[in-house]
Image (cartoon, rainbow, N blue to C red; front, side, top):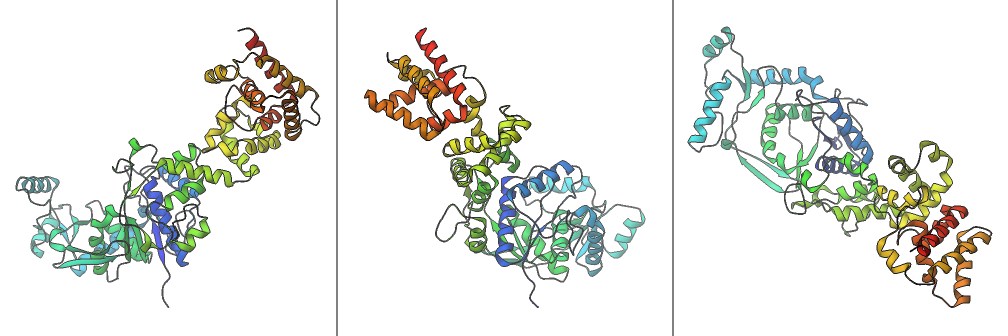
Length: 488
């Protein structure tokens, strides 16, 4: 029976979930879902000095926010548990012992001082920084004598001669000359495994069939292939995707803006938009469509369709895409999404979030077209819940300078006094009727009134805003503006 696809994402819990790591997880997830395979979350936590529970929680929260789920992992278990490396130390030590007994590894007694001197000598000679293999040629007697003296030792992999090649699913054939690789350590003197060894053991014992990761791991691949073959198994297939660059062409970093997935949630991005955007960093569907549902991405994703060239993280495109996803939400769903941001901005209390649900849905309908981020809700709703203390200066000069403005604002307030029912449609009809009867442009009424009601020259539809403000508050703001204009 042919084994199904088993792909994995294996982060180290030493920091937040970087957008590059999130894209790697997403590509693995899409590949597994497209092929009907299994997606595994594995935690590489052997760096105990830097690994923290907080970082692990941030990684898991970031994946869940994006909607990336897993079939096996540290929290849900699976047939190849445990799924965090520190709990798998006995496996690494057992496999290292097996490689030692087979002759594929050997004991290295070199001290840190000897290794430093070795590196210094190589630098002076402008030679590659490689281990010189001095412990590789120790006789059994010499090895035994050092052990008798209690000298600590690490285990090194015995690099075979020849070349190591593999067919990368993104980049094609890649060949390494083994002579350019050194006898690398697989098990430290304290019994902990090194990265390449632990990854290889995990991939073998978890039956991983495909490894999709960043191109910065290409140099690790020949070591892992050789280790796996020394263990007696064929390595998985590899795909190395390009790095993500900032718009200046440099590797994406904090100077380009936020790099943590969690930060984008805080900034008001929708997880659906972030998922879509990350999926298109290096991959595109055959029709170059940019807004795709999760189901469409699963159906169309092919790892062979991932570009070799670097992907550019374009914040403007992400913001545009987020706006498109916001506009695709129902008014009810949008209200649910932006309510936490209103609470965070101090514009809504927890109690009001429960008691004013219908009003929040109306607010969502009024402002949806203008939102690009959920955080934008604050600037488009502040005047609904707080008094207007100032007015846009350019708007004042443009819309309040005509001599008939006080009269028109007074008329507008009078119209609202008698408007029944107090609905958008009825208010608009009454205002249009007045403008036509008096032979004035609708804008001569609307623009001064908008400024009086909101303090701004742009915002949701005026008649929607009036209903959201309510009759009494709308009339009060119009008369307040009328008084301010007259006093100038």
